[in-house]
Structure formats: structure tokens, C-alpha cells
Amino acid sequence: MSIAMEYLSKQRYDEIAAELKHLINEVYPKVTEDLAEMSAQGDRSDNAGYREARRIQGKTISRIRFLQRILEHSRVIDTDALPKDTVCLLSRVEFTNLATNTRMKFQIVSPHEMDLEAGKISLKSPIGAALMGRKVGEIAEARVPSGLLRLRIESITLD
Image (tube, rainbow, N blue to C red; front, side, top):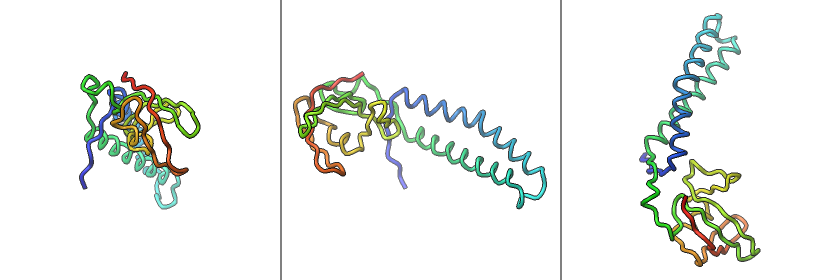
């Protein structure tokens, strides 16, 4: 199975690296210590503390591996190389839903950075994918569960 290359902002790459470092250097040693302590209490088959410590250890290892895979298959985006007049990764796009005349503004990000509350949508979402490669004034059509959205691009900025 090959994993596709993901592109991340420098900020998100650093956040993932910091979480990974925290898990490896602080959380995992504590989990291992707790497991050893529960194991020393005798019969493991009847030891709820031991089972819980094993569950936490498994979750921690799984998260560490997941974050390692993200970093292994990610590259930080060189924002200087991105087009300023075309919707691309990290673009902030203001657009109007032509059916409701509602204006919205989102930043297009990788799936690992998506955060609707912060105004960040994935380039792989229906709206994100429809906006990619478009210019100001163009109409993008996004197929969403409620139907087809027609979106007019009002502005594109790149931080």
C-alpha cells in the first residue's frame, strides 16, 4: 500500500512534531511505568487496572505510529512558490453561494489541518475540491449531500 504525499503548513507540521515528541518522551514512559506497576500486582486475568493500562498503552502506541506516518509522508509547503491569483492549498477564499446569496470565507488546507470552527476546509472536501484551481469571478460547482452548490469566487488571498 502506498501512501500519498501530503502537504502541510509549517505551523501544522510543527504541531504534529511537538505532539509526537510529547507522546514519546513524556506520555509513553508514564504509560509503561503504570503498566509495570499494575503487572506487579499479581493475577492479570482479574486485574482491571492492568487491562486499562494495556488499553492506554495500545492507544498511545497507535497514536505515535499514526503521527509518525503523517510526518514521514508530509512536506512543508513553500508558500512563496504558490500562485497568488488561483485557489490552491493555503488560499483564503471568499465566495458567494449563488442560490442563497450568502458569502463565506474559508482557508483551503490539507485533511490533517481541517477545522471548520477555525474556517479551514479540506482540499478533499466537495467545496474545497470544487474551488481548487479557480480564479476570482469564476463559478465553481460543488456536489454536496444536499445537492449542487454554485459558488462564485469573490477574492483569493494567501497568508
